[in-house]
Each structure stands twice: as C-alpha cells, then as structure tokens.
Amino acid sequence: MINKKPKVFVLIGYGEESQTFIKCRPLWSKYIEKQDAHFYFNTVAENLDSETIREIPGEIQIGVKGLVSDYIGSSSYGQNYIWSNSERIRFLHRRIKTFKYLLEKERDPFWVFGTTVTSAISFKRLTSLLDRFDCANFFGGAPIFKDIPFSDNKFVIVSGASTLISSDILKLTVERAENNAWNSLDDVWNSIILSEIPRTPLMRYDFTDVNINHHDTELASQIQMAIAQGHFHFRVKTGNPLTRQDIDPLIIEKLFRSINIIEETGNVDIYDRWESYAKSISPLGSTSIDPIF
Image (tube, rainbow, N blue to C red):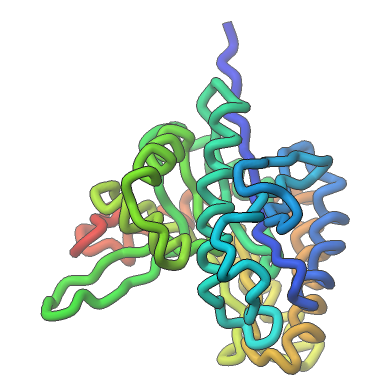
C-alpha cells in the first residue's frame, strides 16, 4: 500500500476593502492556475450569518453578520493599514471557522499554510520542504519575538502572514477557541492558546520600506538574491497607505515571474538552507524554538 501525501491547503488572507488586496488577487489567481493544489482566498462575508461557511471555487467565505453588531461595517485597514476592533474580531472569527470547516471536510492528516494576498510563495518549494516533515504536532512560520514585561525572556509569536500548521494542531486550536476570549489579533491569539507548543521557524524574505530597491534593475537583483538564498515565501509590505497600492502589486508580479522560472528549472529543494537558518536563530541550536525562552 502506498501512503498518500497529506494535502496542503493554502489560505490566502484577503480583505476586499483594500485596493492593494484587490490588485494583488489577480496575480495570485494567475499563479494558482499552474498549480495542482488547494488554494483558497479566505474572506469574510457581511451578508452571511456568522455561523455560515460558504465554499465557492477558489474561495472560502466566512459569514460575520450578527457577530458583533456594534462593530460590523467599521473598517480602517483599507485606509491606513491598521486593524480596527471590528476587523480583529472578524478575522479571528474567520480563522477559527475556516479551521473548523477544513477539519470537518478532511479526515486524513493535512497541512494548512496561511499567508496574505500581499505575499508571493513558491508552492513547489513549500511542498518539497513539507515532504521532509511528519504532518503532526507542527506549529511554525515566520517567528516574531515579543518582550515579556518585567522579564528577560521573550515570547515567540508565529506570524499570521506566514503560518504552517498540521491538522492535529488545527484541531487543538478549534477546541481551545471555545474557552479563550477573542480579543486580539488572530496570530497573537493563536500563539497564546498554543503557548506550550514548540515553534518551527520558517524562512521568509520581507520587502519593506527599509530595504526595497525601487529601481527596476536593483529590484530584479534583490528578487534574485532572495530566491537564491532559498526562500519560498516573500512578503511585500511597503507600509505607506498612499503609495502601497501602486508599489506592492508590481513587486508581487515580478516575484511570481521569478518563482515560475525557478519552479520550471526544478530548483525547489531548500531543506538544507532552511535547517541552517532554523538552527541559527534557535537558542539551543535546534530546528525548533520553545514558546518562551
């Protein structure tokens, strides 16, 4: 009997109030067309009841109508890229309901990789890496180190823009959701309720205001450098609300073009480079990090 590889679901966080998101979605759609994979834009729908989940081709919609009536319709991210209370509530609701939906849909172990529409990924690099892991007890992604007040220790949060979870940990998340308040950003909340689960750090290259080379030639070189370093995930967040909608989609389009080239040439094995990276940031020199260190 041949063991089946676990399915990989890629959830692409999307908020249609943002012009940046609207312009980036077609770039993802074009890339997805070439992939034999399970990609879903993960959205909220204000016209659907909060207990309703609707799957349409390429999209999982989570209803939010009646969720918290005082907040529904209040949005700030589309204007200033800062989450309002309404958006925090809705997107955490979206995360938990989507996890629950996938668990009910799939009986065999599976992976979920969560990212944002303002990123680009090499799916073949990701799946090549996943072939080296057991699909169990895995909670990982791009790590964020937060200071703990009155302590020399740090708490490790897994970024919501780059989260990889095995289905058993997904199940644990859903079970704990019933007993934990939903009052923070979804990635912070998820890291808190999984406070005893080690984090597996994953590489990510961020294009930000600090490091972006806007000249076409320099940007092309920067993209090639990031790919040569073995990254599979590239996040684009230039930050300025006045210009981001024009700059970010152009960078993401160039990233997908370069990703298509490396996938066609078969340059997708990144395990050794990931292992070296993980050990370099782990206090114990291992490939995982304790939640608090």
